[in-house]
Each structure stands twice: as structure tokens, then as C-alpha cells.
Amino acid sequence: MMNLLYITWEVDPVVFEIGPVAIRWYGLLFAGAFLTGYYIMQNILKRENLPQDWMDSLLLYMMVGTVLGARLGHVFFYQWDYYSQHMIEILQIWKGGLASHGATIGIIVSLWIWSKKISKKPLMWILDRIVITIALAAVFIRFGNLMNHEIVGAPWDGPWAFLFTKAGYQVLEPRHPAQIYEALSYLLLFCVLAFMYFKAKAGQKPGMLFGTFLIGLFTARFFIEFFKEVQVAFEQDMTLNMGQILSLPLIGVGVFFLVRSLLLKDETGTERTQ
Image (cartoon, rainbow, N blue to C red; front, side, top):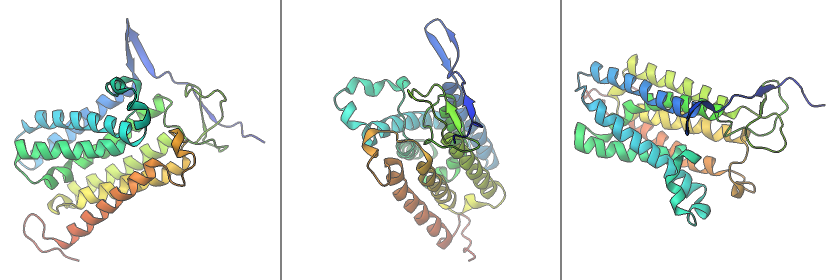
């Protein structure tokens, strides 16, 4: 017998409209992700007695790298068959279609350029710090997905299942709130990274925060994918979906940097204690 104790999710993705312009929850949460990240990174620069004017350029590079990488990641990893025949639609980001794996690549490339042009510091220096803000930003983004009724979970007859009324399915059925699973996982990761940097001085150990971030985020992503609805048609016959396949090498990269950080001297030249 079907469990009737589910949550009916009827939130309108649009907060309000002004003429032809629609203000959406997703857009507000996306902006909130950058604002909170700006505040945290500003405090990190202040803590390390570094120029505050780095923030403006860093924010710009991050925004471009995130949006461009996420969009191209979706295009090439998930729907190249479609977009190769509709190239102009690649620019229509407002229609949806962003991939976190692509965003990761885009952010790394943009920060490499920023490091060369602005900070003159090693790329790993900024990666170890920016991942704290990215982990929190991921929380905002997944709640944005929840408000958008997208990236929904697979059908499930459980006590905290959600009925996504605006997800576009002809037949409504309770589902896993996969967006919430991810958001809570990333919130935990943010707390771990913040503790490591502010309390455990992990910022002095190149690669430790970056490695922990990659392992934590993409391990969570790998397992939560089992509770998600299939995102694109070609995944239906796959044992592991595209999100899981792309997560595995990033977890491996994270393990490499974490182990490497434990074997190297920290930035003060002190030998690592094992």
C-alpha cells in the first residue's frame, strides 16, 4: 500500500515577475552563494594580511569560470548529441543545464589564470582556500535545484518523500529529495573544511584542503546518484551514470593531493608529523 505521508512540494520557482523579467529562487540562491563566498574569502585574505583588492578580480574570475565551466560541462558530458545540432542554444543558460563536474574544471582553469596574473602565488594556495567557499556555495545551489523542482530523486515510498508538483512529470509520485541529501552533505563538508582551515591550520599544508574537498564532495555525489532520477536518456542502461563516472577520477585526484600533503613539508618548512 502506498505511503500517504509524503511532503507535497508546490513552491513556485519564480519569486515574482516585473514585466517580462522573472526573479527566480535559483537565481537568488546562486547570487547568495557568491556573496557568502565573497565574505568568507575576504576574511581569509584579512587573516593572512593579503591585499583586499584581490577580491574583485577573484570574484570575476570565479563567476566566469563557474558559469562557463558548468555550462560547457553539461553540453559536452550530457547532451552533446543535441547541442551539436543546436549550437546557438549553448548560450541560452537561462533554460537550464549546468554540470558541477564542468564547474570544477572551469574554476580550476580560471583560478590558474588568476594566480598567474594577480596573486603570483602557487595555484594550490588559492585552491586550498577557495574550496571552503565552494562547499558552502554547493549548499545554496542544491537548495536552488529544490526550489526549481529539478534534479529530483528516484520514486520512493518513504516517510520523507517529496511530491514534486512542478517537475514536469505526467504521473506524480513521491520521490527521494536528492537535492536535500546533497545540500546536507555539502554543509557537513563546509564545516569540516572551515574547521581544518581556521582551527587546525590545514592551510599551511598545501593540497590538504583541496584533496579533502574533492574526496568529500564527489564521494557524496557518487553515492547520492543512486537515489536520483535518470537525468538524460542515455543513462538508463548504464550501471553507473555519467555523474558517478565523472566523480571517480576526481575522488582519485583528491586522494593524491591529500596523501601528498601528508608527505610534504608545510608552508612554514616544518616537517610533517605522522
